[in-house]
Length: 203
Image 1 (cartoon, rainbow, N blue to C red):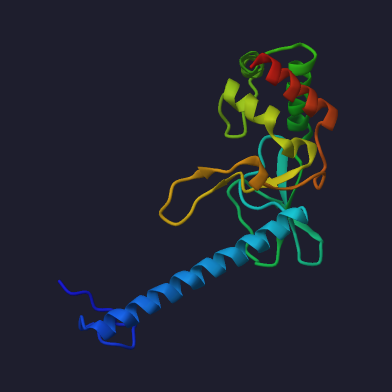
Image 2 (cartoon, rainbow, N blue to C red):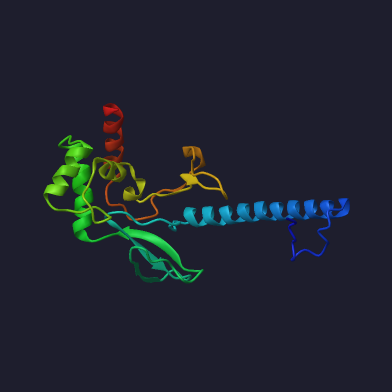
């Protein structure tokens, strides 16, 4: 069956001229899409470097704070909520004291008590403390906390990318976009570095 492009100003009659016109139009559309993608990426990169959160949930012990265009706090976003004004921005802030205490306990237990991720998860479950999804902790959940730089106040973006109709690709660290110390940290840089050193030795 023939495909008719009703939005195009030329006949889709299969003639050489029609084929050339369609080819040029397709190339123009592809180039426009590429240029737009570059501009969007540059804009998102700039916002990350300014300390604004780009997508994703905050994580256990953290919350997302909505900021107006003039820098005034507008309130915390609940899980699943998104901003509805284009010029608003989002930053991360420490969450409830109980959750912050749990995050610090996780780091302290890993460093001082030399507990493994699985042992920490078991201890949290025995205390009936649920993870960010309201479920039981696992070693993998604990591991994600221990390696996440947002707990020291760093903003990192572009760890992975997904192009149209493509597969999710994990980017190399040199492609990550980061801004250090733009959020209020829950643990210190020294604690975070010590955890990474211990993890490397265990591996």
